Length: 276
Image 1 (cartoon, rainbow, N blue to C red):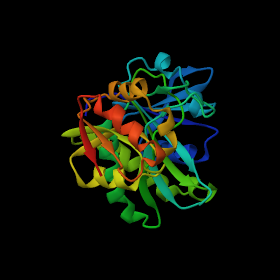
Image 2: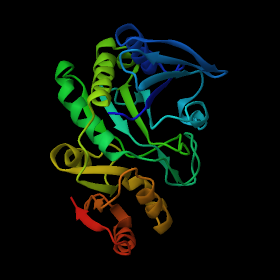
Image 3: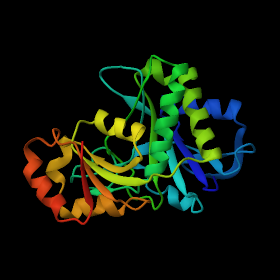
Image 4: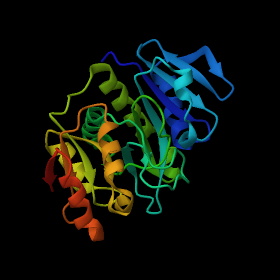
C-alpha cells in the first residue's frame, strides 16, 4: 500500500498511550525532529509510509492536523472506547456530527471523509485476530464525534471499554499489529459502497454485512440521529466518501418513527436501496 498514513493519539488517552508504547517498543517508531507546540512526531524505519503523532490535547477537537501532515493520505486515530457496560471491545468508526450538537468535538452538521474499504479491511482483520484475545468483541460503531473537517479520510480504532482494557498490552498489540499489517500489505477494495441508516449505535446488522458480503460502508447514521437526516445531510454522507457510493443501506426494522420520512428522502436519490 502506497498511501501515507498518520496514526494519531493523545498523551491524555490511556488506551492510545498503551498502543503508542507498543509501536515504539516493537515496531521501530522513534522520535523525529518534526514537532509542534501540541505534540511529537515519530517515524518507523520498518513501516516507511506510516508515522505516529502523539498529541497533547483532546483527539476529538484535533481539526488542524492537516497543516502538520499536508502529505498524509489518511489519518487513523488510536483511542480509548468508553462504555458503562465495561465489555471488552475493539471498535472502529468514522467521525461526524449529523445534528447541530457538537458537544463531542467537530463542527455541527458536518461529516468527516470516510474510507469504506479501509474500515472493512480493518474490521475483517481485527475480527480474525481477536482469537488471540477471545474475551473481546469486535464491532463497528455508528458515525459520531469529531474531528470532522480534515481534508483526508479519518478512521477511529478504539480499545475499550474501561480502564482495565485501556492498559491491556496484549489487546493493544493485537490492534497495532493488525493495523500495520493491513497498511503494509493493503486491503481488498469494496465492490459495493453504501451509506447506512438505522439500527443502534453498535449496528450488528451492518457489522455482519461488512464481514459477510462485498459491501463497504461510508457514514452510518443510527436511529438516534435520523431526526437530523434530510436531503442535505444525506448528500453530504454520499459525497464525503473517498470511494463512490452505490447504495443506501437501511435497517428496515431500525428506522423507528422516522421510517416513512427517511424512505421518501431516499427515493429521491438515484442510488439503489438495499434493505437488511
